[in-house]
Image (cartoon, protein in one colour):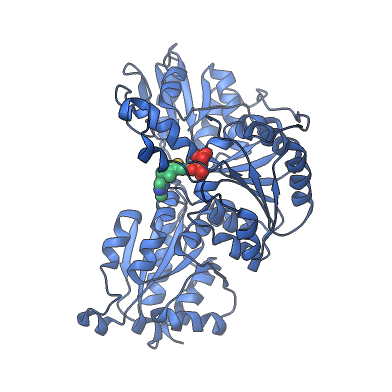
Length: 520
Ligand SMILES: Cc1ncc(C[n+]2csc(CCOP(=O)(O)OP(=O)(O)O)c2C)c(N)n1
């Protein structure tokens, strides 16, 4: 067995059995090993930003990491933006980065680079395997380091890959579990909840599943605290039967106003809330200065235990949670705009769908309207780096082939990683993509005004950097060119029909939804 075969076998033994790849010459022995070792599903992506976003979407839905195969420093560099998003979302990932053979590095060949230097800022753990005999142990360590929410990046020099591995692969290693939270911290939270102060519990982290939401709702009712999620929870269970929980607004001014009266903020998996960006005359911290913030559990700590313990101590086990009913809006008619499309999506969303949201401004109405739609999971953009949605939909569909994935995508965001459509077609993934084609970087028009740049009004050059029409993009042609069936909707009736049809079909479909900007 060579190093690459030993590495692959070790990954599979550790339940990492999907690899999103974009290989090069230095990875040829790894690629060869895919045919020698049984059990690794290998998914080709045509740009590294697609494969890292896919690994993110996969791990969110599978609740275990995928591996990626990247080509030296430049391949890893191309993947960085979506590794960043995964890192911010506490999503595990095992990156395997091919490198030149160890003895070749001193020659400074064209692709030689400081791979560890590139990997460091987006990884929790970085390691270069030194020999074929070490690679299996290193791979097992990488999986264990990725654990439940971290990024592990392992460099695989070509000679480590092709050299003989005399130690053989590693068996399954013990997987890290959420870190226990001391009972004294739960008691401290309880004391704050009982202090008579105005309290809010904010939940976030890798996942707010239905059970967690329901427990939080009961805790809120029993303690009188307001309950909310952070602005962009990584994965959140929503729709009929899910708990009624507020969401911290995106706009700093609104978020500040929402929690201005809170005196005690208890954080479970969520960070202390901050403004997404700095603006002149707007504070960076969202909570009022007088508010005490208490971290009850960090994202990799035992959130379930903390919630269960609070429930018990509040004697709230039999308290009825507040849940959303199933209430579907009527289908809209007339001109198509983002608000009408939201009604259609809320009306049609199938039970157990996975919604991937990178619709930016066009998604504003979809989130509240789907609150009472059929039960579904919602994946958010966690690191602010756009070009995540289409790839994440690829990964989610591979993790959950039996669930419909609905990808809500801004036209500008789509163009960063549009090649994801090709992988959807090649793998016949059950994804319905809606592109909100408003021909603008609409949110940036709003942000231009909010920052006060040039008195809030762009000049012609500035305006041209926020306008992505002319040439107007034709997403039907782009999708068809990559093997995805696609249609264009310009009226609400067309969108109703096309969205329903796409949901009924199996396999990838794209709707090019031509909408005006929300702030037009
Ligand atoms: C990697 C990266 N580059 C640039 C940006 C800045 N940015 C934020 S939103 C945005 C435009 C989004 O446009 P679109 O997806 O069409 O949505 P819309 O604003 O029109 O609703 C840009 C360029 C970013 N967040 N991430």
